[in-house]
Image 1: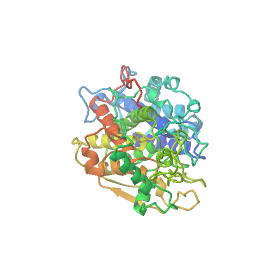
Image 2: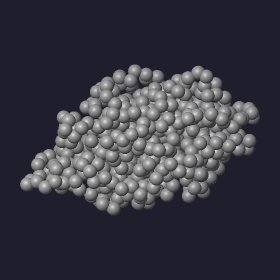
Image 3: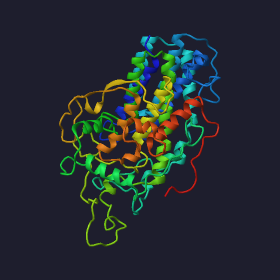
Image 4: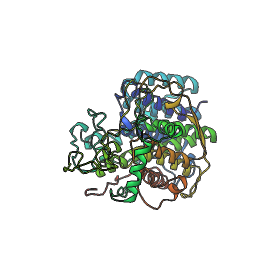
Length: 482
């Protein structure tokens, strides 16, 4: 019998990919925010459908006692247990959530439903029950859109250090302006974040010089990025690219490899993928709240407007003082499989969404497999060929990128590379992800700066409190960040 969790996870990841196929204009769940939300909904519905049929005692450790479902008031199941019933319930939950979230792909999703039903069999009562669970999970998110202002209504600040549209892509819209107002999925306390380093600090200046040299366009004579650093930048990109999708898809691809290597049971997969995707769902909410709260400029603006005589708030001077460079361009987030130039993502820099999503995922995997010492490296490795470097994907000039199979020895190593990859593309400052200069320093950092500590804290909170729907979702602190 095929594992229904892995089957429907694959369908969900393909929906993410197809949704972003066609000039980066996702029709259903656009960008990292909505796509992480969608994956959380799908996997929470599968989780509760599966463990309602199997019984909560089947929820694998680590899990608080007593073990419970995600929903506070879940539909009741009294139809007995069997592998066929478990699979049918999961299929009912997955197909219902996916058809709701990706309505334009209904025919494709229903085709996958017929496929797994032909392999695993089906049971009408269990399938209908799974649909009820899905509707209950969807109902918990029914008011999300009501608290989110329209992106097109956002007006950027002309002030120094503030985020503005990528000057290399001046028609670029904003994304996720009010997404941080949506209720959390499972965290029980709002996860705080320290401010980024002040512009006058040594840390800011060091990170400025780093991205200036390592993140620049290849034609700039100041760019010193190595081929391996370029590969790291591209490997982790998934910036809503055509035929590739968003970062949560990549992190799920990695978790799939780990789950297969570990020989997970279906029970373990139901729990692990719900934990991971719920953590990413809350990571998107937290990261985007802090992004628009701190409203920090990206390198393409910060490097060009470092001098007081540059930018909308400029005051006249006789010269432009280094390290300001009004003509600097980043390598940029790739528009893979399109004949278009790269770009800087359309939302503020701090904290990095990539770093937050990735840290939440990899920390959850560490915790799930028993690595509870937060300051030491684990040994949970994997090998994965990124869709950005699969020997098929093309760059902005139409050239096929060389296939690259990359191995990581640990989740911590992946967490670090995922974070610093954004430096090599020139779209983030190091502190947007972590203040740590290597894996060891990242794990042992005592500060709370960047997406890495934010994502790790979200993962730990969700695991420690049992992956439960909050009766009253926590709210972010009031007051301005800047």
